[in-house]
Length: 301
Image (cartoon, rainbow, N blue to C red):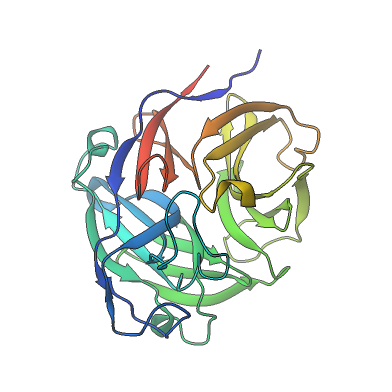
């Protein structure tokens, strides 16, 4: 018998970006230097940083005027102005103690276009890992790019890692058996690359392809109980831009989920799967069941 993940309790709303000035450049909906009250977060990363504080980074932009969650939106503007990342941090303490509303402090947003000269404006779905005392943030969309930080507060862009299909996006990194494994979305399939140093990545291998309506996004791969579990949520026009269906497949081979069994369907959008300092598991969700970012316990049954 194998284990399957289950959302093990209610979601707790922990964060939503507050009112802020849009730094530009000007977009379809938003003007440079103008203040907007309502901001939308999406794909995000959560990592433990120095001083036993937990940080989250993620896509954000002012709420488009025609966005009325969950189903009313304009395809041309729903992702307009996604050119910078929110940053929020807890106080000191264990992860479980910080799953409360009001303890995640909003910090200045990071990596707007003026801080990334020469890059395209869009910055999507960051993923952050620590290696040898430095923090590495990988982000899309294509080309996949990287930035480095010593403290999680100040970031230095380091340029492109690799160029793929124009729809290359949503990186996730698992460190396993001495190597890094990067999963990302391209159209209706998922690719996997490997590296020993977070910089020099192998050629991609297709590990999963959709055989149903919609496309996969926000993949997460974890290793648990001697197997690999691949989580991804779905983009389906019928269910709005923040669909809360997350599917989980299990395989003993990280390079092949094509015939892997579907072991769970969870409620989460753009999930992150977190194993904390005590070995407890959690799942996060953007824009569901509350506006902003929410976190729930995850059990393996």
